[in-house]
Image (cartoon, rainbow, N blue to C red; front, side):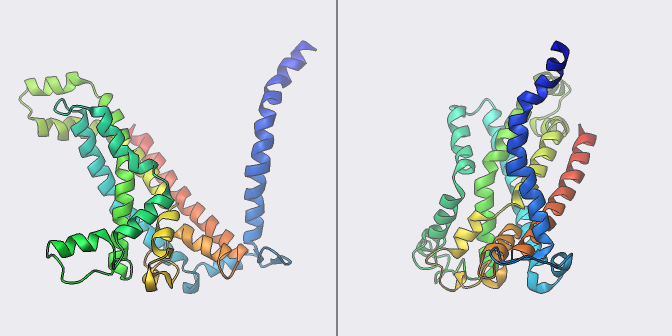
Length: 303
């Protein structure tokens, strides 16, 4: 009897978590997949349509590939900037030339923990066409003759989104690079110095190669996080004071429509097409899974 009790004891302790996961994780996942195979507005009767919603993703009217392209652009530009700047700040803070290192680490990491709502509203105020601080500063120094409509022109709107992602994310990469630098033995740099290697040569030949696992991890998590981008561009381009920039979902010419924003607007916007929204979500899931698989394989090879 005691043997039987010991056999089932682990499952007894795991059962609260398994019940919680089934109720709030597994069942919603299965239900959302079923919804992706139907035409449903959330209220009326579900109509089974098979793979029609997934086929519609290839239709330009779904804006699926437009949103994926926008998201890839934001990630491809902002993530390398975050990583380069984060590594530079981490190297500076790890050196012996900086005092109050804990204070500067906190200051640089604070943007990452700021809520997306605050970030979106802050950049909305900074880049406002008429009352924005950026335009006032550029006009004050005579760099422009009139205010730039940052959030009303596709190119400028994308630049603002990239700057916002860079400002918010470089502190995240800095923390991981600091941890990676701390794990590199100082004996390697001392040996390189004895052999006549300068500081920069030592950095390129020792530090960077040993930081490859950290770089790979930061790149993978950055790509996954970038594909989940929603609140910041939505608040930036959909808030008050935007003029015509808020007339189209995703900004002017849908230039800043991210994949999650497209899913949210499709499922919960004016059309309330739950089935198509769920199909977009699973399409996004496949994209993230591919990047995660490739990145994880590369990470294992590097490690």
